[in-house]
Image (cartoon, rainbow, N blue to C red; front, side):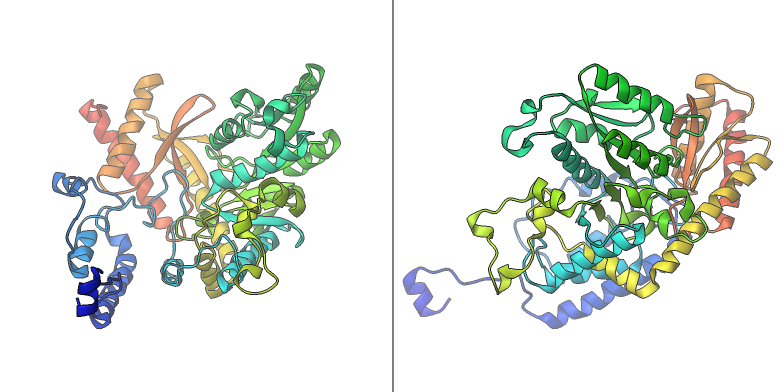
Length: 495
């Protein structure tokens, strides 16, 4: 502290920048080298492993008060976080529906963090790139250039964006000013009994309540029953409700079933409903040359939710909501306080991107998507989608050829539901297959999830992974049969 500061009682000024950038540069090179090794060797590591007690205890350590060297901090991260991942970047991770990231996207996330822009809006390059990636998403799905859109955290938020615009557009009043209690006739939304749970959350968050969402029965292929949907709409109108929106699935989370999007679009037009498509599983099949026909009609939707962190393999997190009517989209969310007014020039002369969603503060999600698309080209991502769908068909063939395995539902796209079947039924069957799933995880072989299809418990393989090879699927079948026999011989299905 110099004499002037001491005399005035001022504290010495500090910064979070390092005192020696050269040391940081050396460590940063090491971090990058480690990251390259981490990904290049991923196949040689277990998919997942349980953390030992000392690692769990590390995450209960108290708030740090004094500094530590960056090298020490990185060493702790390497020993704990990097050594015990969820596993979704591994080629044999097929649990839930994740996407497997890519190194270029990770570099994009790093550069976005270094640049540090807030994507609430403004006149700067990151804002323009955000808009460019949204425009690319429109092109991939066949949406008009005039449509609205925004990048969000993921599919749940993308669905909420689309359904909020649907509510406000179909309410018949100014919902933003008067609230849902002023809606004359209660709104009704429709989706199949296979829709994702985020739609229930959306109904609750929108003040409509879970009962406003009618779940329509599905056919043998788990697609929405069009006749049942028409009957439900007519029944609701007669009962004094206002049918407002139908939600189509471009890939259900359980089995990957795709609703007849063309027929739903036509029905929505005839019934004056908003047509929203939950495309978080399969909207991007639109770019796959061999399978794009499966999502024909998605381009006619009023709004679509999709997830670049799935089949574009962007690092988490990035979703996208597209809305055909850009005016209705902005009208649903825009607020202009005096501190966020646009200027004719300068930093505030750019578009305010927060006018298209719920977040005022928005991270720079676009760069990781942009860089990977520029490096590989969209055609390669389309071929990778075709590859995953072909791998699912290959796995289904292996299952059908193995007497001890049973295919529970034929795959529509890239999700395979099956079970080990030695002649058991009911809870005994469920316990055996659950134990197989857990041992596959605990032994680091593969990560599967489980679900219920047509009332039957089964194992679920979602192949949303650019690193998966057919030999991985061969291994899965062999190990499932081995574990099934082993558990049956033990007579043990305990957790």
